[in-house]
Length: 82
Image 1: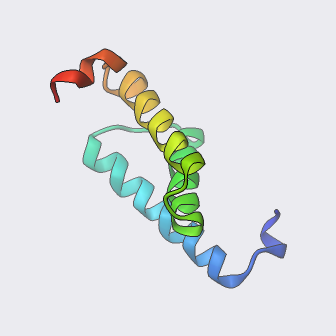
Image 2: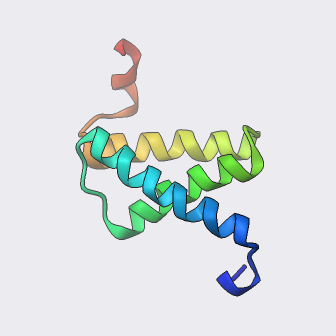
């Protein structure tokens, strides 16, 4: 869906979740690439628009794993002691 076809409400959600993605990155102390920032924002936006469904939660878990491996130097097995 391109921006011209999206409702005003969806555009507001997308913008606010981009801000949340930046806040989340700052909280983690990472400097994501623009592509990764969009990925984070998209997952947050999907959660707001679609709720906690299986697909959104699977994407969130994959995002967590990716961020941990890419930016925090942690591997999936490292989470067992958290």
